[in-house]
Length: 454
Image (cartoon, rainbow, N blue to C red; front, side):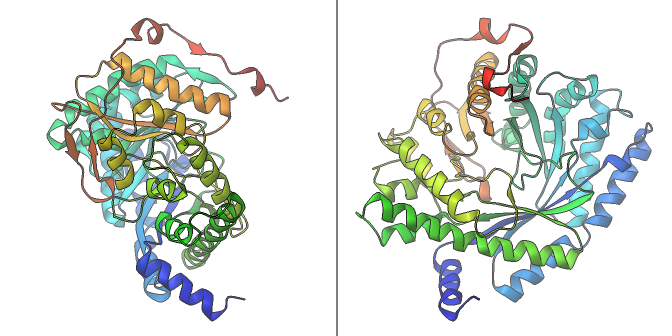
């Protein structure tokens, strides 16, 4: 039973410490929409999404009002579009029509974002998957709410370097096509290793083929809550530190479980998972970097940061897993630069480099996220950064991702403004030495020896 003290405590978390449900994400399978006629396919996609998601936003608002819990985003994820459009699409331009259909469906449903303009290329690329990847720059420049992801590796398959090499070009082209928006199209494009089928967070979400026809997944956010709790045990030993994080994660996740259960019941759609991730925002006091500071490092990136982040990530999972019926998605501490004011400050101070961020991604979710780099960065360098991060995920059997934004016309030290949850980011320095001879090799990097489990 929940007692009155716990109710008061939760209210204080919401009112003073930025506790919120970051997203209710409705996953929708589009496999039954497949047709070899493009017009019919687009019609089927629009009708299914708008039918299944017609009550998502209103139900989310009702839950917010009744429980007083902010639900920041209502989102949709769909079956990877490369699978859905493979029969009907004969060119990248055909896939762009699907992106526009998805955008219109998202707008009619009233959701913030729709993910799943995706391709699964961890071992190889079909013609359809290659066409979708080549369509991404146009699709991102012609839509408002669509997010795209490409899976290029896994622990079981290795890394598809042909896809990695192509994506270096695609990311740069996307930046150029949206240069008038600060190359914002790249903020809606993520490259993944070991991508889960049930991730509720953008931009990497898609509705996996292992999922039911429709499912409700929820992501909760509470960096401010964790920081406040840790400030009350400042200077105490690691046992107290870890217990405090676990206890707080339990309380935060319980809010997510409540919302997920209510949304599932009211929409008559099965509950999937609660994602335990600590997802920051640009708001002051809602920062993972501030938690690391509270643990004891002067700025994110200082010596000890990776160890502190490993501790935080592990204790959040240990506390949260007890509060949810099903846990999934990414479930860790996000460390995006533009979406976390403390991370942004650390970059500006010179405490945090791209290389240190890469080291931190070894122990948390998800990877190199929302990082602005100079617009003249070589395409092969972008591919090399992707390959490095995919290798971390592959070898460590975890999800890793790359969301780089080569901001056209910007150089190191400049700032780019995205607004809203996307925040603003300082343009970070990239290692000036080349890797073209490496990324231009054809084929794939084999899976590591410990991937052989059978």
